[in-house]
Image 1: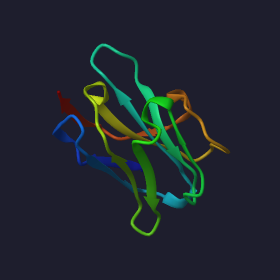
Image 2 (image 1 turned 135 degrees about the vertical axis):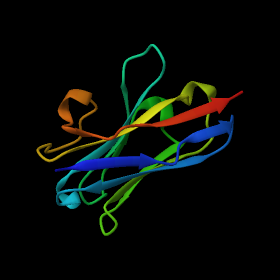
Image 3 (image 1 turned 180 degrees about the vertical axis):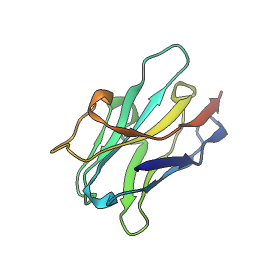
Image 4 (image 1 turned 90 degrees about the horizontal axis):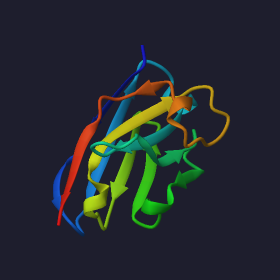
Length: 125
């Protein structure tokens, strides 16, 4: 079955950078629309970024535009989230998500079928 495994989280000071990775297995990765969501303590899980099958199209929530970059390597079955200029408000558990049936971008967590276990990102001030 499809499995997503995130890594790369950790503790970083404000202004620093982290790169998250999500390794996909169990099916043809290049058929899946992929996204990153995040969930801060006491808050709903929210959309951060998404990328189309071939990586040509990318989408970001306004709060991360210009600071985060989503990318994918279909040869390695991996999607990445490069996070720069991190802020304390970016502190959250970050989840990788994927879906086979999406025809285009979606920022709704209900549209994604497969999820990773999450990786903690903590940004200190």
